[in-house]
Image (cartoon, rainbow, N blue to C red; front, top):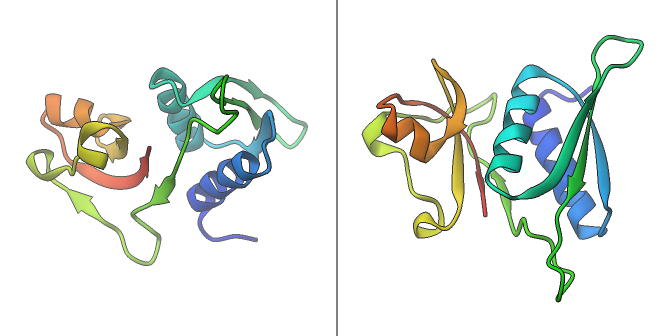
Length: 133
């Protein structure tokens, strides 16, 4: 059993990208679903589907996105920031810009999981989950 399900989620996507897989299956949770929706809205993944299983946990199927010409993955790097052993929090005015604005940071706030730009716009801080670029 793993102790950090978000790190496992990011690692599965990272490994599927390195192996050039089209689809990756990940055990589901509410936070993973929210992160998947953000990745889709920001254009980092092609599509996703939430499926229920017999154990009621469910599975997230993510279709990864690749560049048409170079066949390289759109997601260059997924970096976990806050871990169960060392939580990283940031107020709304100190949420860092990722890759000088070219990437996104995903933040868990009191208003739900959102990107760093949305959190700054809504003036809420929270736990920095990961950087994507």
